[in-house]
Image (cartoon, rainbow over all chains, first blue to last red; front, top):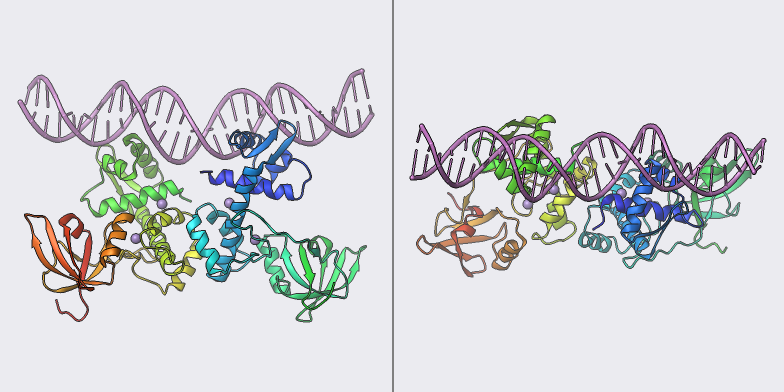
Length: 224
Length: 224
DNA sequence: TAATATATTTTGATTAGTCAAAAACAAATT
DNA sequence: AATTTGTTTTTGACTAATCAAAATATATTA
Ligand SMILES: [Mn+2]
Ligand SMILES: [Mn+2]
Ligand SMILES: [Mn+2]
Ligand SMILES: [Mn+2]
């Protein structure tokens, strides 16, 4: 069975591929994994050896179907665990990512199946990230962000593209958690500022970089 | 932080010390851990180096206070996880030991604390094994076994000294799970046989080796 | 006491994962 | 076309955990 190191590399490659067209460069993988470049090269060779990726020296690396299936299985474990920790054990959504990063390698399929059932076969985790199915498919609807959605129309926060605990706690404080609603009132490109009204009628201003990490969908009952 | 290998060795030493007077021999540790003798020697040296055990070459090894505290902490995690898996996720008591053997190294104190609270600060795990407290004390009442308790008096199964799934499923089938009651009707030393009546009025005969692994206490309402 | 058996330790290797730094390559710039 | 820059790969080394087999120490037995 794959080591937790292998699982982490595969998951990392999966994430990198989502935001990269074509193969992933060694440098990109190395910095995403927080290892030296040579370490990434060595590891990618063993992943290729194990039949999990396609590797072209100096041409980058990409998951093959086997590797992608495994990556999605790890991701499923990760996200179900996160939701479990929040829903069943009452941990804060800002702290579950790091916990899940360890537990995803230790939990058996039997336990995972029970957790999934207990949670009612959920489709998204506490951050709104989609949970891959047991058969390895992910449904990732295209969502606008606060940086590019309609203004003056109620939207519901659907997904947060950042796991940083500080940032998540800030969103909590601001009432910008998945499920809550908001309206973008103004975008000032020069000032890099986006002003919005939360459902608690608070007015908040954030920069574009932050707004782009907050994905939204039209609020319930609102036609797009 | 200690590696999971270190944690396993410490836990193993703790168990061995319970049934050994004086230091634990290298051979005993090696076979309990399922490693070659030389591996045990090497590992014990690094444990001594790390200030967790006292090691006398050719004289055996024993936990020091630091090592024992750590061992008990791992044991606490192990047993709370077992109970959690049974009570919250509905796994069978015969399969939780192996699961816990992995999870005990992956779970944080924060998660452990939540599990403990959710379970109502339990004192024993699904096998009746006492759960060490967070401060590292274990209450291990002296219990008779079916091999040496009174005959013709109702007893309650309190603890099972074997984690083997096959054995645990056999006990399940026989109605000899912790909490259930039984009466020893007859002991035949020559035949190595102990006959008992279960609370479902079934008659069961087991050998001494098995009876010795089933610890009991006087049934409720019965004066000793 | 000497010989033998048993347990323990040492030695030399192996595997997974890592780093630092040198070498090689590819791309961009002059 | 030649040089500079940036990226990738290679090399040599290290740590944790392990094994097999040789060497050594201790106990047992004769
Ligand atoms: Mn991980
Ligand atoms: Mn998540
Ligand atoms: Mn373990
Ligand atoms: Mn147990």
